[in-house]
Length: 150
Image 1 (spheres, helix red, strand yellow):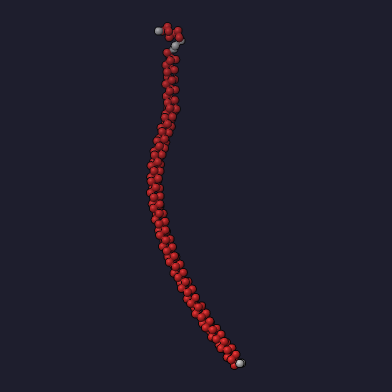
Image 2 (cartoon, helix red, strand yellow):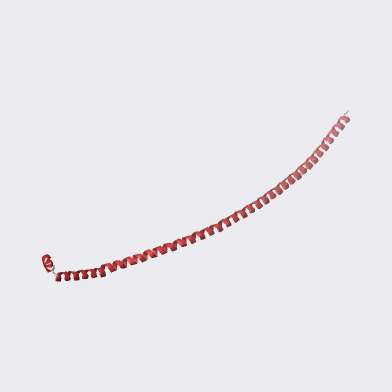
């Protein structure tokens, strides 16, 4: 074996030094490179977990907000329906009131028109009586004048 080691030029001191150098390099790389990378990966993993938890919480909050929105919309729709119904009833009552008032006014106008017509008729009757009386007097005068002139 000695001959093989000597034939290949292997020196056990160099091998020990290379093993020591490799161990030292591995330790330095472990301490300065591998450990910080593991720390960064752990922090990143925590951020991702926190992001997932935040997303789940946001989804729950969104669902609750949607349910609340639906409840509010249902209540608002019910109130709107109630308001529309009350407005319709009020409009119908107001319409009936307006129609009744219009009928009352129409009846009053018709009554006033009848009274005015009766008044005009009575006045015309009085005027025609006075005209008839004047015509009768004129006719009587004429008759008397014709009889007297004969």
